[in-house]
Image 1 (cartoon, rainbow, N blue to C red):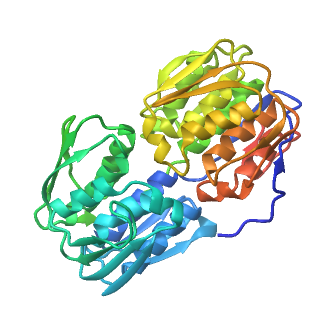
Image 2 (image 1 turned 45 degrees about the horizontal axis):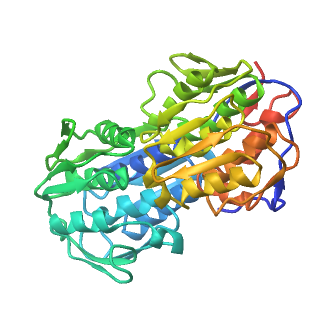
Length: 440
């Protein structure tokens, strides 16, 4: 997808007034990509409503199309129509390019082992560097004929379609929950079904719970306890699936209210949401913000002084850079643990967060599984983003409080939230209705 050219680096305009905003956010990337896989493996025609249009979802749509799935995105209306393959993607020869998308690479690896033909799964250089060894070991255990073409344990790989027959596998959970989600999504189409026994600790468990919920919305039953998931061979049922707003994207709106004062309400994310990253507001509440949780919306109000906290963010790790930025303005240190695995994300997010806070004069330090932020004066500077959308969006919030903040490579937000800068401008701009933000 293409964006209008942005200044690079992009200057951020400090906020001149407290916030009073109601925000409508685009659909969840995580839900969109899970629903697309379920629809692709279903029997019949499905419709995905409020689908996110971003680089990661484009990668998923194009990857499924490469596997032979009849898929028609109508991005302007947020609608994607998918003619399901009944569990057998039909392409004789397929090249899946996951680009920089972790969900696309980890979900479509097992899907590529279904159907017939020769399949190659590849990605952009940074995604090639990210770990895939546990996923490759698992699909081999389940029968897949898969060969690494490059470095062992990494993309690119080649698979023989139809070789993934299923069975029983033990899977580590401490590297990425996407490995488990990918197996579960393909499980109903495996002739022998699928049983996964978890080894060790599962990071980002709410994302696995999200996967199961989307599968159930497409008519599949998953039997599970705390450490085992069982999926019998069964068809996905075509359906119309409505995607919730993105809770990870909402974290930036909520953090803005905590940082600069006033209130931000995000519509469509309420107490019934299954997105784990909505729990980010619990951390803001611990720091001193006021949180109002409604059935169909969530509101955060900044009340002035924020307090440092100590917290394990293993289950809300995508919001760790955002919390780090908020922590820079708190009273007292903040210690974040349990997130060593985010060193294998788009960048080493622990090191990147600490480096950029230090660049702005903040006393921050890294630990093997987290970081510490000791508040102090925050100065101006140009924040490097390491081609990481979450670094750009989190550190842009500093500029709402501090003059002279500029964000390098602002276009990297297109990976998951192409309209982020529009939202931020409307959030911090003068009163008046925008395309994403309106005033109460």
